[in-house]
Length: 121
Image 1 (tube, one colour):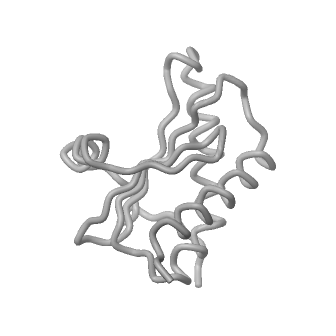
Image 2 (cartoon, helix red, strand yellow):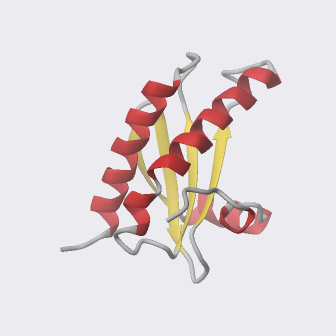
Image 3 (spheres, one colour):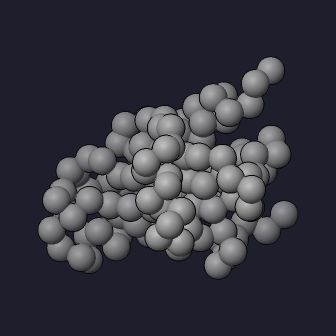
């Protein structure tokens, strides 16, 4: 399986984002938080970083890149468990600039918590 994050997987619909925050459930692994909702489409993922915490656009873009890369490398956790009809938004909620090791470790924790909540044994 190729570890890609292509255009079909990206959450872009404003209507879907509004529905996600209005009706979605969340799971957290500080400094990451995930809001999710079940949908009829394929797995859609978006990332977000607060402008309040990171004033400079270059800092926000850096954190977003780290989040997307950590998701891309760890999305097999979702695909292996057939979790593919969800809309996800991954938020970075800390004020500190992260390094990749922290984001990667927390992404693994976040995805495993999400998997445990969604997959009922």
